Image (cartoon, rainbow, N blue to C red; front, side, top):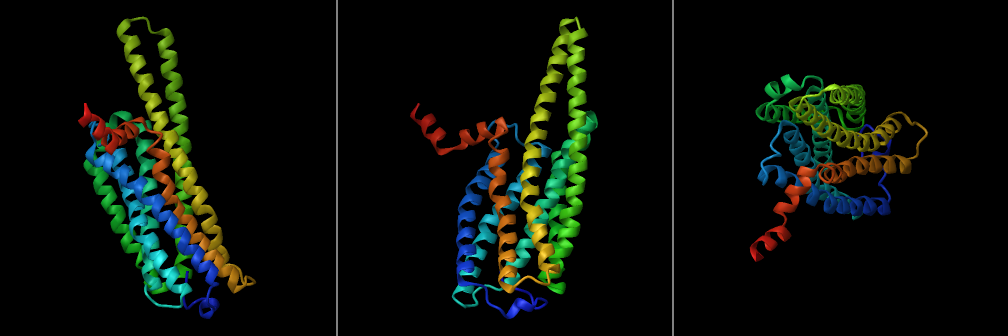
Length: 310
């Protein structure tokens, strides 16, 4: 990735091999990111079994939509930019690449925060959750997240990539890390306490109605627990992506002894690591949630052909 004027290595061209490597890896991520996220968006929008249009899944739709834009826009722009960089041409401005990077990264982080808050509210206040958290409010929240991501990211145009990366790492990423960890610990504790409560109730409840009610509550708790575990896996992969990226951003800002070759590698690697997160997300939750798997199979061309043959 080319450098801002604030960096002394701005005038030093990156190795041609690094530019081709970044372009090739971006092309691979494009092929990985688009199909998975497209299918998740399609499954929620078409919703063949009418069980996916929930507030939680609308947040997943927003996350998948963001990741899909990474594959459709961010990855191809990266391919074109880095190939032109290797060929010493100017086809795409580095500012275009940077602005998309910050907008989509910020939207992903804030959407994950909304997903975590949604699960916490569902576990902590299940009765209020059904009345307070509606699909309309989830959609409005997602729109607000996108507006905020657009507004904050354009600050980069004023202060440059290096300094804005540091601000981004300290505010959007690290602060979100802390909130997500704190909230997720609360989710796990409440789920365990609720599951234990309903198991104990089942042991002492004698009536047939009471047994059925407790059994329904246990099933509901298991579903919520599975959703929380799926979200936890998504968050862990998110941490695995953004933590090394943040370390690299700190090195870019404070490593005075780093060579220009090291700076070039750090810039490209932190960029690619963040893009990887968008490629793996749909495969983490779409294949773990049964409703998604059933819906994806229902809308797949193979299922349609089998139905027509019958």
